[in-house]
Image 1 (cartoon, rainbow, N blue to C red):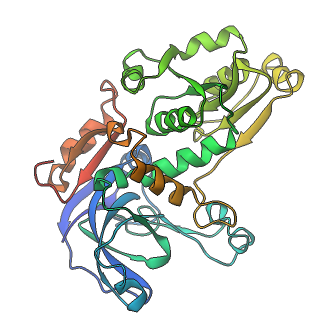
Image 2: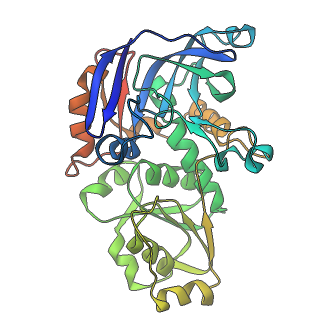
Length: 341
């Protein structure tokens, strides 16, 4: 099978590898599609993974084609996306079935080989079954969709709420879609006019995020999906009294709020909520199962979030596309099942 193997920072190679043996409790997934996340860009070209070599890729879906035991064999032929975290099952979070906050996890694509490959063995436990009517490329959006839905739920949006999303990446746009689906009046804010085009294509009102620095508190809920000091300041200034700020973006550096901005949190009695990863097989919720239902229903335009697809052979073009900041994009994706992608 073909794989993209990361041997060092900036050194990713297209290679051939034998399909490995499945461990007990695993199935063999024929990868149909795998998203290329901005975190993949960082791992490949800046920080590296936890060891070399590593096959990146954690946003993926495919078809179950083989299994190690009877439980898995019942699933052969089914489509599935995969929760990429491999929890330790022993820490306090895991015992509470809050696997997203596991303190000793492994992860496909960074700590374990991932899905920039044609096949991957995965535990049955990590499977998220997908209905046959869902395009495999849409199914491969399950991971960012679950992360986005998890964050959106933290906003406790009510019908008619005015909602702002700061950030125009795939996570920000999915949050906007879910917030609209919950009845929110959503505006997407970005730094560049070109970056707002995908949001407008999805039917959202848009605005320049610098306008939020005027301090007009117009929104019941604001999602900060950038991860910068400036964006967090904008989120605080834009949230009306009693409103909620959901911190989503991974931080690009240290945060330092001015006293006047910090006062707004106190005097407006704002709720500040953090969010991390997504709920999978939790005690009370399962974001992945909810996403699978939404994908099958077809009301949310997940397909419009896929900007461009590539074969594994086109990996150089794919990474050039990913790193070209002049091009407006949501999600690039490797598609293995369609040679004409």
